Length: 229
Image (tube, rainbow, N blue to C red; front, side, top):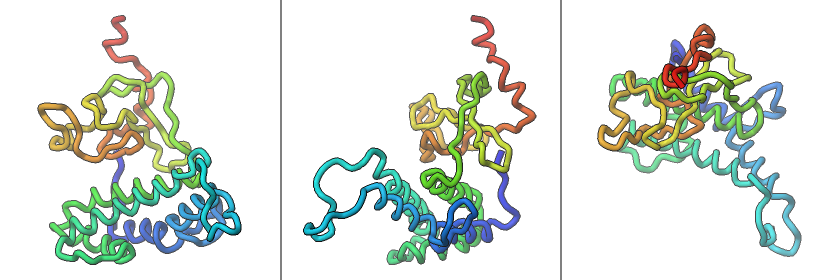
């Protein structure tokens, strides 16, 4: 299972700084922020603007996947805005930069910091989405022949570029059959429909089951329901 940094406020400042202020990495030349890089990637995928049309792109379909960068940017900004307004509901006029600036402090001060781990998790996920869409890190891969003990599906994933050395169940989504760590997060699943209410998308690691490298042999053992076939 993922663990929080010793200082959630410092980690949030670092992650949000990468997203909104500046991002530097040997594999990503320049100092533009991740959100600005997503905007640049979107414009690049659209192709050059033509003359005589007031700078607008000519009519016609966009290149495949051209909207992915902007969809990711919108999703990231919505996550930051949602948490900032949730933790500071009396301030209706925050700009997006102000929301990002305030969020680290709000996360550790509001409600005695009880939601800090949730905020860190969501901002980590947003940061990771930006890196994935920009191609700075490799996407996760599904390990063949490995079953999740919780949902008994071959949905164990790992991130080749991750340093934490974790496996997780990628059986996400909002359907009743989505895998979710109900033991740690019992209030997320509707008892009548089985549908999750914790914004867990198929690519999200939010509230999923995590496993260590030491668990791999156990994960490669088919569940009892399959051994009996």
